[in-house]
Image (cartoon, rainbow, N blue to C red):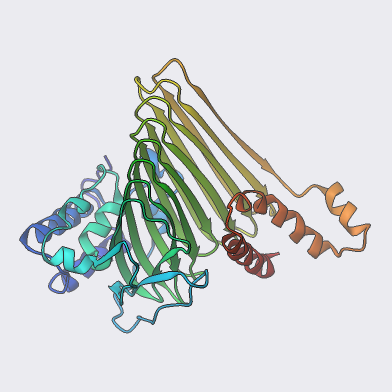
Length: 423
């Protein structure tokens, strides 16, 4: 619990409360939703933003790092963006407002704003625990998003792209998504915005039913002045597979949480992370994974490229329940440090209560190998191009695990764009 008694609120904390008072009459919700919003803002007022004293936020002292909160800007909206993959079905939220939904057979889209208004979103506004600052802020301010249900047995050849576009000001959205039994779907969650200071929260809650095969890709390309606090939570059913890619390539202050529960025997969770960190940015990826039943598997691989004065964080916690025998869980965090002023903190954790498991974790930090760079230069490749090739090889190894060529090309294009700006 993060309790600060008898202290003055920071400028950001005061701005959050003032913003709630200013907008509370505009926020959708029935009486129960309004009560949940009030409880969330009261918890935030009582506890304040988490500091380094809170273990889960030890490397991302939000009270210190979050110095200001921009006001909501009603004119910050935009139209839907062109999709990452041609032919994708696009569901856009712009400046906290859901735009038109696509028509896809076997897929039901409902605006979160409508579900807030009729009270049916109430169960999604539950706070994870006392240190859930993202849940508190989002529950207080959420205005819209997309609630999506995929039918049993559906197989989509092209992705569904969820766009959350926040150009400036404030925006707070949710994406509750249910995947039916034996469904096979790729979803691209695209977090982006224009130039300028922005503050946004986004929470995706997904349920993966038995035998489903789901790929969920989070792409983040915010401006160098933007702050985003995001959360992804999932439960995985029997013999289901969930593969999550997190690609961070922008934003001044970013916290991406991933919380997964493997509830079905034979379930498999795969996490791949790519953090491209430059300037004076601070990016935190925090994961918790619970293996709750027998015969489940998971692999998490995080690749980080750090340059300039950027700082990155990866916290990964795997818990193996007492009855979760035959669990196979692996975790690795690998960092390429390109600057003496850059920093990356890795905190892998294992809590194992079963005795018949295969679990392990590891973390490495390195710089570009001078011999490798010399080899490329000796063959006529300029130093800057050689550095780019070596960095790309370091990251592309896990991007190329995706079986979809258009997806691989799209992610490599983001990598190339970042390299051109920072290397």
